[in-house]
Image (tube, rainbow, N blue to C red; front, side):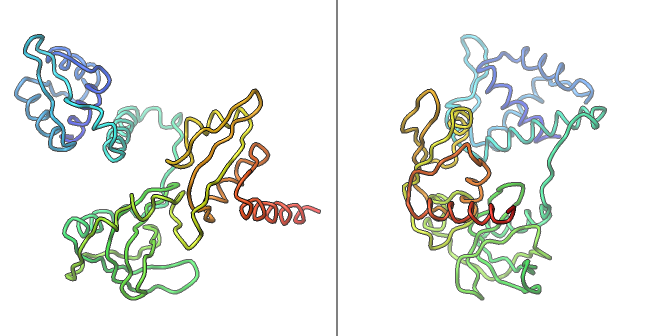
Length: 294
């Protein structure tokens, strides 16, 4: 409940830019009157401080107008984690208060494993290893000691990316395949080169292998291109050209298996223009698919 009010306050100030205390109190009463809690000044100040600590921001008051506002909100918007927290908490709160609409709200669930998130992030905070009992799809369960570098949420799954001491290499572990995850006594040293911005900067999703980094050029029909323009496939994506029929984009990344699978999902709305090896790979896949239906 406490975090919920703090997140609500930040979300409100992001939308309204500025608001007096009375306006904030009215908005809270309208938003969640069923909670039976009024937002008195002292209560507001408590949740204001909690919000500042939670998001590492300053909520200031303009004494000329007595309006509260977030100082440097652009810094808050640049944080993917903060955005995820606000969006997820806000939508979850709305749905929780609208349970009578359960048969009219259709959601996708994750594949599970969230129960391991607390232990894994605790180990990350303390620079401790994680002891995993892991069930892969192609082998029996094994126990691994992993240096937890970071976690990533991708296509309804939570993943742990870290260095496996037994296998002496970088590995990716899906939370839903973990039998258990416990904080180990063994420590490790986290370095800047192990951050996702470095290790996965040139990848599409969760696969990082020896596929070379390439300039990938994709031409979409206009309808699909407008979607890709607003929902980029990769942070390096740029719009090269556009006409009345199509849009052409360029991005620089590793065309790994998960990226190829994503491209296949666009069917005839997409034509790959470069690199040549990716064109050949797609031709081979399409040829094999055609033979399945001959």
